Length: 253
Image (cartoon, rainbow, N blue to C red; front, top):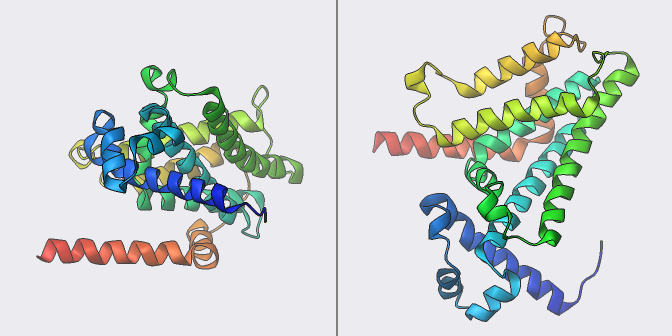
């Protein structure tokens, strides 16, 4: 563990407090409601203190996106520790991805904002590089499992497709689907009764399409999911249970 001085620790703590105030502003009221003066007032900081951390609100948006990527990658790392064949470990990553989407749907609002040119172009190259690094860490982790599958002979990639491109396909599918689940309340009316079940099914069919063994017909992946949850995500499951209880209580009231 790297030891940091008191001033640096206080600086980091202030920055985290700014982000804690900013995230719900963006999620509840939108990007245009994010206001540096409001942040300063709520935290009882001077405006100069806030601007010392973030020279503009676009920098805050980017910092929130980096925070999101790091939190997701941390959950992926836990899933990747699951002991099993490469596709089982990829299933564990899928479990982590779904849990993150269910527990933190607000993160997808921020991630949709960060690539808007009018926001991105106002941010510093330093923070842009931090975001690129966070993305790379996540992609590299998932790609390593694909490489492990290839090395073990469980997966033969089609000609012209590398591991990172396969992961890009998985990333595109899950990010798009979970973004819609987080922001589109009309899905049931469109016939999407359970979006999370649909994503799981699509992913299994996709990996079967690449003949990544064990195939879905050869292994009970529902049992794998249950083991992953019990071994690596007990706290998240407890959070899910609390959320369900709160939702039921609200419905009854």
